[in-house]
Image 1 (cartoon, rainbow over the protein chains, first blue to last red):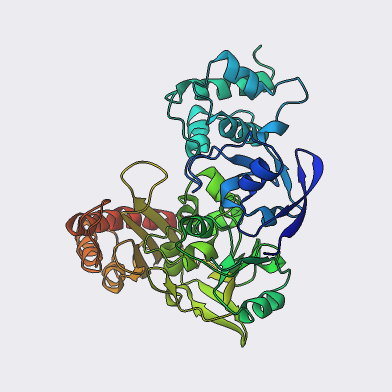
Image 2: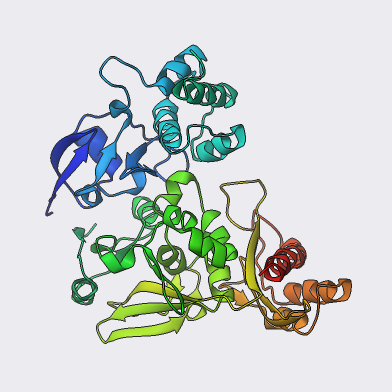
Length: 160
Length: 289
């Protein structure tokens, strides 16, 4: 079976990989590139645990073929913090205890970061709709929403 | 399993050549939000996948003298971010916007939603109601077909080997013409339509309807143009008698199935209720033009 050679950018770094045609971007991230932050929940685009940012828009990496990543600009959860400096969304997830088992957390962090990149002042309703494609079976969502709204306030310079 | 290959052509001609030359089953990849699920489940086992997103014509929205040209593989996020299209055809944009999550909106497209040929495809009824056409490329050149001519049954289309949708042409709204799309699902988000309905109306200066198209989804093997329901609106304002006729006619256009989302009787009832509500929104929007 002919493998496809792909040159892409992941978390700001040029990356090259070989993939089989049926391998998803999620398969490539986890199995070929050892970027295991993105999680495989449903593999059908329902749960959002594999969310990555592709050319500025959030997508489910389980619904993209690895070969489709050619020339794209991809950000995974590993690329959200700047070195040891957590992104405000990550910091607020910790402070609000917005996770329990943690399996959904990478997807939520990536999706929430993309929301705040587009809109630093989302309403609670906008935040809930934006994150409707990320499922959490533990928290009941409320702490997650509080963490994201609080992170937005920090990023606006309104809160500590 | 036969070996799978992948191609990402950068022109329509190249894509046609690759698709037409395929020896086994070839699948056209737009956003992939249905195709990748079917690949994983084994429901489809193609030998070739042709990604259309590298073809410049297939991505983006252009406003022309006649209306809009929408690239077939344009993702939902670009559709709802288009202020011009949203102003002109709010119902078409509503239909696309209702599909899936923000993540799905990053990929899902009109051509993919149409050619996946689900009876419940949310983006299709409002396109048909607006009398949109699809431009199809194939080995014999290009042809244009009304959107309602594409889907022939669940999972089945009228496209032949080597053909795929390049773009959609949506006419410019006439004065006092507008549209609306509503769907009913058992919760507020992320589900498949029990009933979907696109209503497109044109009014005269007195608020009397001069033209109407009512299109139902999820109540038959394909989307249904409810001719009688459209006719019930023409020549009338949206009074109680007209609404009652519309409701009954929409119900009569349904040939639904029983499934876990709703019984036949329930779907017919909901189709009538949604017809009333969608017509009210479309009339209100059209009156403001």
